[in-house]
Length: 387
Image 1 (tube, helix red, strand yellow):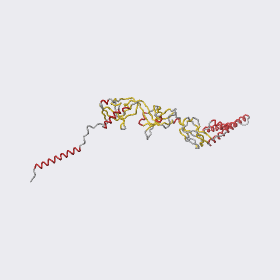
Image 2 (cartoon, helix red, strand yellow):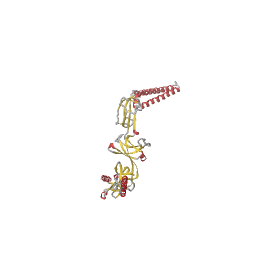
Image 3 (spheres, one colour):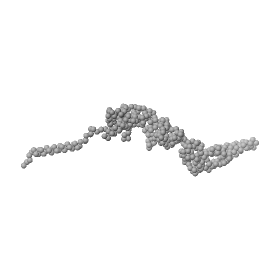
Image 4 (cartoon, one colour):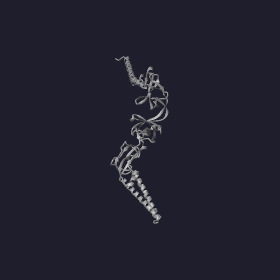
């Protein structure tokens, strides 16, 4: 017996309905989720009118700023006032009289050494002196003999020539002794008494502080060896490294404020005396040197310092330091976007100048910025974000 016709029709309709429902479910599964309409921007904070009165808002404007650069540096001795002292003759050091840190005066004996070379130079001096005396007496005799018509004028001229040569050799021997460190008084005693001395002094040629000593008792010293370094520290250098991007902002004779942490962050005034013409290839910096008076010796070589180099005032958009909020290692300010609504906006700022910071990027003139209470407003933003 054949099944009824309506049964097959109902079965087909059911299958079509199930297929439609399955396709609809698949399309819904593939469709992306709709964004939450109530999602809130974490950088925006809304406050009540009563709370808004606690925050002061002002329009950004162009301000007069002091152009300045702040760099790190160190104290160094003024090379123009540094003297390296060595022995003028080869010899063995017999005594060292000063050490590093001692203050010395020009002409003060720093060390003594014994030298056979000095002894030989003194013998040469005595020979030259004796030859000069002999030549002088020969000339005197020749003048007497020529008056007696015993000798001719040619003999007198020969003896006068020998006297000139003897005197020149004597002067050269005297200069040699001075170069070897003998004083005029010692040379005078040598000429009068003929007493030789094998000991010579190494003397300071400048007043100052002994900053380096490279000699010990018993050491053999050669001419040209730097045995002592004496520096006059009444005027020192403060040397810093300036980034190449700021090279054009520093000029000679600019005023510099120097802060020394080792001296309780004391401040000193100086001026730029040197700006390097070349860039260091590894650090990409150029050397800046300032000069500072140091009459009391307060500043010591190799002390660390911070240099604040002040240039000509410039006109630039600026925000008060109280407006700046540090968040995620970046500077931010709160910009009012509507009454009672503020947005945390990232900005790029320059160095501080008289309580203001130059705006380099992120804001435009006329923007409404929170200038008082930014810290508390940021706390309110964080509290709202947590809730």
